[in-house]
Image 1 (cartoon, rainbow, N blue to C red):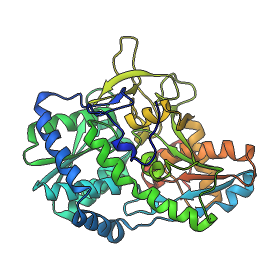
Image 2 (image 1 turned 30 degrees about the vertical axis):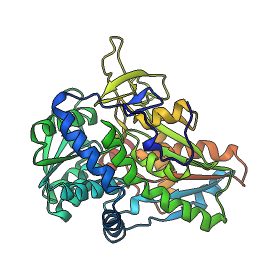
Image 3 (image 1 turned 60 degrees about the vertical axis):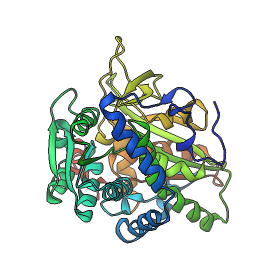
Image 4 (image 1 turned 90 degrees about the vertical axis):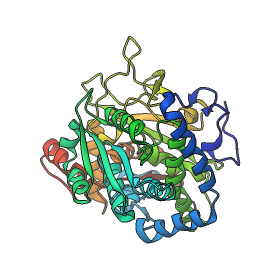
Length: 408
């Protein structure tokens, strides 16, 4: 199983939309076939349409606020020794996270499709917050499905969604987290697809939603390639791109334009609490392939093969599956995956926020843990870049409860 050079990763599937013959696909009910086919045809045209691309770029520049900065973490580098550590501060984008790229593109697609309503799922609340912002910007009525557990632990983003006029639907089934929010959102869309567009918040689900999300967030790496060349004169051979991985959207955006380079990709999953057997790290823990939300992927399962329970301090990573694209990257050995525990992510948040003028959310704090672990083992000529894809504001209640203080 190999990654083809010169071809976008999202297009490296077979006629059944399977990557490497094993991952992805459209495992959907018959009622979803037509809306999925219609959306696939529309997006295939739009991604090659000059006026649509011009419109996308206009809003990325004037609304999203691209490019987001690449900064050297001088204090963290000096504190640890070893590799030079940088951060791509994607949290500087409008709204505080990478989810704004996908939300903006989905709203533009909805407008082109003549839809007046848009629905989406959210875990950490960033996908929901960004979708509510973009929906308000483009005059669409917005409904967000969110697990009841996540509504409680991500209060700041819930308040932001409501201020933007979105209707929040609490999901009280199952684990009451992201996995259940995605399920309920898809059920709603089945019955309302004639008037409503659906935005899946990450690179999961039927193939078209994986494609739209990865295509949208690829803006991050388009910027980063230019910034790296400006900083170093070229793309260094000894460069590691570290990204947290839940559904996988920020990592796909961070890595996309570096696929044909020597850059090393390291994805960091949510290892959960140290004293718990529960986690949200299927790639790190040898999970088996299963079907979740319409796609084949490595997924946390119980002994009977049912979708298993997960646990993470980070709502955005608390998902039992993983994007089929990441499964493909792992099996092809193009990317490596590891995990960080809740406690390790909290310690990384503390150190980075104390030493630098950024305050990462608990999602990218998992990736910062890996940077902190790796840097002292590497030479000063080696480069680590972490995608700081979210701001800690949404996690302030959790952080205060766990640490007794909140560093902004």
